[in-house]
Length: 163
Image (cartoon, rainbow, N blue to C red; front, side, top):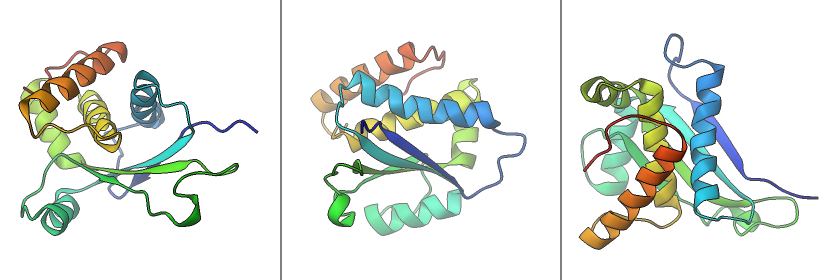
């Protein structure tokens, strides 16, 4: 049996008028594009959560000590019981990407982009974090931003990238 990557999508906020079925598929494709670009061959699973500012603020406060909402949080997970490293029937679980829909909407408007494009950018960013990339140091940031820019280009998105 050949396993493929699995991208779960959970929504904790209403999406009516914001994202349709095609948009939700494009969110999954953004994560899959990162896995492909980065050469992840072993089957992996991750979850994308679309939520609100209050939920992201609480997670940010609890796990990062920052008491404010943010656009995206990534939580790597290697502790999912006996399947965390994968087996013949279960892919390795990479973790969760949590997105604040209201913050993404504000950022999209400020950048002159669509919400869908902004969410795809944030998913690319979050997936790179799950794969071990960081941007705390200038050299790390340059590498992560270069990968992010190339994946965004491959996805055909046209939006300003963060500096």
